[in-house]
Length: 65
Image (cartoon, rainbow, N blue to C red; front, side, top):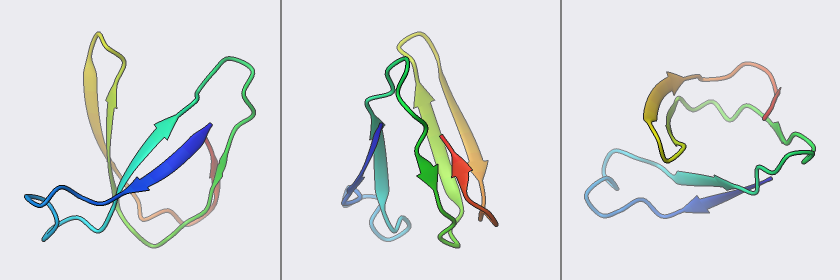
């Protein structure tokens, strides 16, 4: 699994520090440890059938994804 940091689109740049994209979530892939960075996250998930949005953080401990 990988995480990539992307520059926010111009329309969001005033409000968003970074955009992250996750990829490579294949069966059998070991989890990735995500360490706290003091930021709140807006997580948008889309599996092709439905999309959900979750607000999370700021995290206080590392988690595995």
